[in-house]
Image 1 (spheres, rainbow, N blue to C red):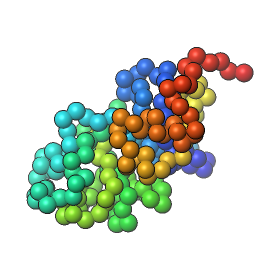
Image 2: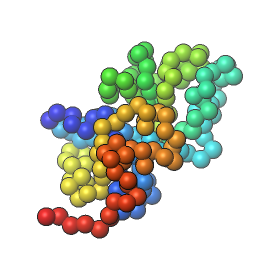
Image 3: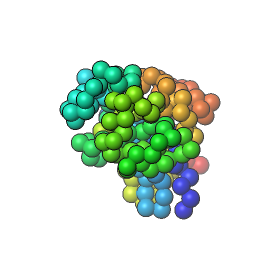
Length: 188
């Protein structure tokens, strides 16, 4: 199976009421015959910034770090909420980086956080705790049930759009106003 949805946004339909996924935008990092893995990119954890993580991990000299450390940490999904996942655009590959697209990598190692502290790349970064996953064919079935929209991902929505606007902006990639999409519909 070709990873059709990798490097795409999964956009929650207005009818989703589950608090984890309501108005969520998920960046799909992996999609293959075994299932799907993604990171919610628009649910900031209240009162937790990247600099707080750096302090907890005893990474020194955060006063010299780039401005990215003032970004909020995101609730990436319901699985493994105690593990960090860093989405970034960097030419440098870190010890546990996986390339998602030409522009975007996901990293789970501490060395990326140390590079932020040293004012190095990456300039674009999202730090998430936890992730989302779907078993084989589970996401495909949810798509058939009209639970999600999919759109090709772009760096602008991923890294630059404010958290509160990502849901609307991701849908605009498709030319849709997400707030005007009907939630009651049938299948032909």
